[in-house]
Image 1 (cartoon, one colour):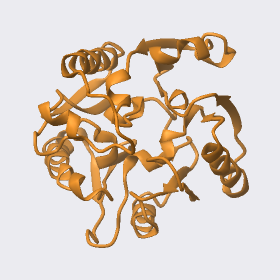
Image 2: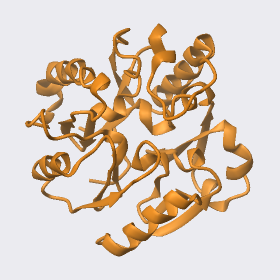
Image 3: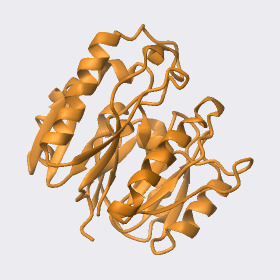
Image 4: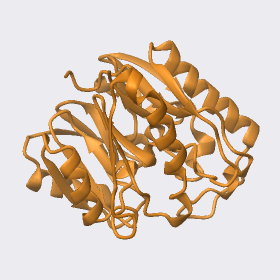
Length: 271
């Protein structure tokens, strides 16, 4: 299986009116809901026009963070693992996701698994990064070792390493894959502490490319394309690494207000 090539993406079709009530680490300016809807539609259009088949769930006013589907499941190939979010207010989000995957599993040949010990095992997809050869998982306020252990049983064919993430929301709040050999990472203090752990623990050697802000380190790479935030265009346009493949751009300003990065709003998988 070629890494970072996908056929499908799970997404939320729209955003809830309650988006302003979404969880965030800091106080934030009010979200412009109309602008957020336009930004999300642009995001969906880009994914669909790139050739991905979108599997859509509906927003639910009871789950303000539901548009951030990345945290509810982790996929690789046709294997999909339903998580158990560490944030109590988000745990109900997984049910609609589970139902949607179950509806399409037979036709698409999906293999489904998930957290079994819902009382003690917690895992969010934003803490899980697949490098193409192994998984790097952040231990955070949202993800614990018990959750990682259940995940490792399901994806036993790949090595899994863990890193302590003591600040920020998720592992991928500080980094994402640029390609199979390269991790795009923030130059912030917390990101560099994670960097050191990866170098020490990883089963493979990676190159690291630094950008000056945490949010700029989160991009989507898929199907020989790259999706980046327009807000950081001045950073990307001067770096050769961002001009080697086709690069698409979208705005993420409203989702950033509640700590939403580009990877947060989709889950890629392949059949």
